[in-house]
Image 1: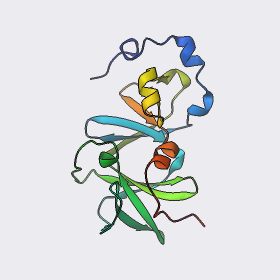
Image 2 (image 1 turned 90 degrees about the horizontal axis):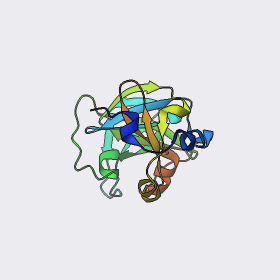
Image 3 (image 1 turned 45 degrees about the vertical axis):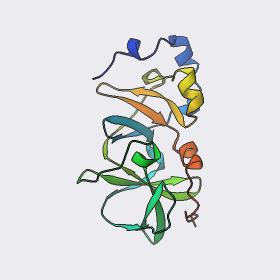
Image 4 (image 1 turned 120 degrees about the horizontal axis):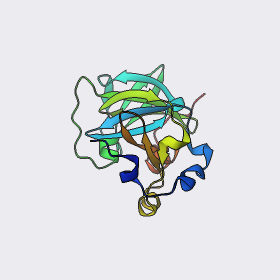
Length: 171
């Protein structure tokens, strides 16, 4: 169900060209939550793990339900289905954890699946409508490649909003 670029945004091509280049990561990792696809800066990803080596927290925050020991670090895991209010997550063989380095800390991010890594040009990113952008400061825009449309997220801002107090600082 891919929409044409014209159906996605009526923003002028000049507005797209005026978007700050700092919003464009060199490569985006595309992942899914249910039927929705998202992209984030692939440079933040340190490793991709299978969803099977987690330890449940008895008193964990609502969004941080699990931790994983990764290379000697206890890393909190944020379940993105819960974070984005997509309902209770279900886990299968495609579910995975992205180990991210964000703000000098390691954070795990549980997602339904990882699709691919893509390189985008400024023309591949469409701005979000003003109301959406104001309501969700962690959303950067709508990315498009030959096959998919996906929402680009600023993982640094998203994890600042998410309560990750238990996270261990990088040494």
